[in-house]
Amino acid sequence: MATSLYRLDYRRCHAVLRQRLAEPAPSRIQLLTGPRQVGKTTLLLEIAAELDRQAIYAALDGPEAALPGFWERLWLRAEETASTHGKAVLLLDEIQYLADWAARLKGEWDRLRRKHLAVQVVATGSSALRMARGSRESLSGRFERLALGHWPASALVEAFRIEPAEATLLVVRMGSYPGAFALRNDLPRWAAYVRDAIVEPAIGRDLLALAAVRRPGLLRQLFAVSAASPAQIVSLQKLQGRLQDPGALETIAHYLQLLEEAYLVAPLEKHASRPARRRAAPPKLVTLNNALVAVVDPRGIPSPQNEPERFGAWVENACLAFAWNCGQRVSYWREEPVEVDGVLDGSWGAWAIEVKTGPFGVPEMRGLLEFAKRFPKYQPLLLCDAERLPAAERLGVTAISWERFLLSGPPGASPEKKEIP
Image 1 (cartoon, one colour):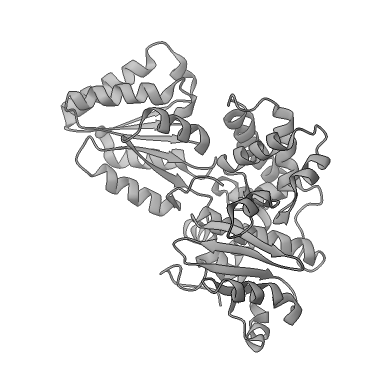
Image 2 (tube, rainbow, N blue to C red; image 1 turned 90 degrees about the vertical axis):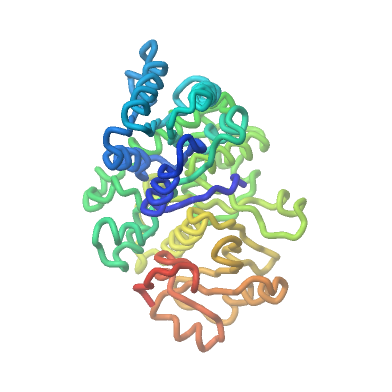
């Protein structure tokens, strides 16, 4: 499982960074990771505009960053800005593309601290793994980590002034990348944007640049197979059999971890009291933005009326991905013949959730009720279609619509107004 991060939506992340940058300088370096195309660069540019002459923005993945002396001139400018304006805020975008970035950042940071210069630093990166490795190795005690997650439905409502029902359906059908929103009515163009601006850079640049990736073809295939299996429990052996270029089980497990660190696919562990049982169980594959599911599935976007089973899998994937993106620890539970779609631990509390689109009865609730009996710590919660809430009430099962869950999580998880029943 990926290391737990302080994951925030765009608005809250902006507020937290501005609050921390208002602290007396120099304070800890702020390391911000997150998926591609969720607004990290936009966030830095907004902060730069707000801070005006105190801010210095630099894109470390641009061609100018490769010029001799670029790094040194950047820090000299920060010194001059701090001396002239009393403080400087250095905003370093995609810092992982700078060779030996953590050691070089540590050296400059320590030098300015010795000179008692008021310089604050925010650095972003699209790969949590690369940022984590460098920060642990060289920046111990000097940094704080934040993560800007995939946009939730509520962020689409706020940013694009659309109805909550439209936002939740969009999250299920086409994901939530803000840059793709304007293209949603032109499917070929929308799919090209997701592939070219998100998938290819994430795999072709962020992950393949790692020394740990020895078989890039296998990694690409594993991503495609995983994204085409939304919310499915798939053993490593079955994954291996579905790959054109099969690798060792250890390699497949390692590459699944890399996909999670790149905010693409999360291999959820089984909920079990003993760690050995968790590790031995097959993972449940959750793609962390449904846009990625849509671009790899040759069948296209499912219709709720014509393909209810496939649409239901997409709804379940979106709900579990939303919980993961909100920083909850997400797992699943299965003891043949019953199972629970998701087990959540974190700031929302302890929940066991079952996702049902379409009709259901007592047999479909057995797994949820059995889990609640064995693990009374967890509150059982059914996520279903809004029109089927009375059926859940007749069965005595606590339920909310999956649309409401995608807007604000389980009951009591968010103080914001809940727009959908």
